[in-house]
Length: 118
Image (tube, rainbow, N blue to C red; front, side, top):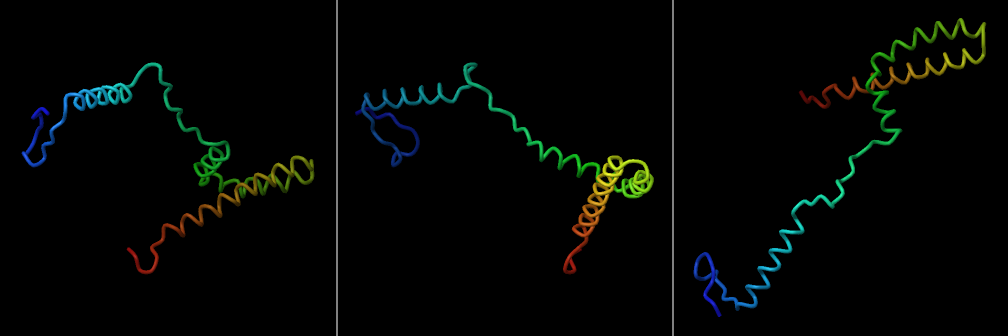
């Protein structure tokens, strides 16, 4: 046994030369495994799904989308007399504006303090 060790005497353990050699090989293998190499593939970046991207766009433009209500309402009144397809598109735009309005109202209620919280 060799008397190699660090720290206080009660923490030291005596290892044989073979045990020291094995620990050295393990440390070398761990260093090689943890070092970055060019052969490793980089981790893929997170890409949100199409639904998440659409939801993000809707939330981003919801304040502007509220203006779709009056504009689409007027366009719908005109489009009913002209074309059913155009009226359908205007109704869909009005629905998007209404959904934006409901979302904005919900966000305003969530910002209000609850139960006397300030």
